[in-house]
Length: 107
Image: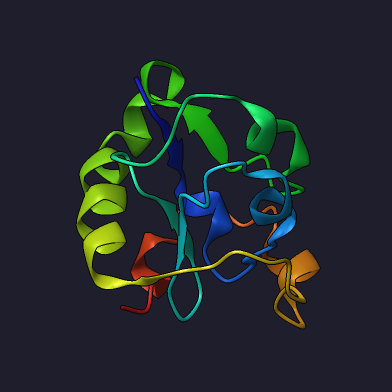
């Protein structure tokens, strides 16, 4: 099992999770983070750190978010690792509770 970043991260991109990851499994896109399933060691440290509550164990991912498992794996192969915390998007707090954000994903 691995951990998955859900669409709640889109347009927020808080990076608190990156700071606690012992294996640098996060990858960064323009407005979203993903977890590389081949690197994740299931330590759970990132889950509690995410202000948007966007990180789930694969088995706990809501049914409406299941497509994010494949999307995380796909984008992890394309995007570069992020290994240190950065500022969140300027309007991240405004986007945090918005639902159905997949259409806003920038690749």
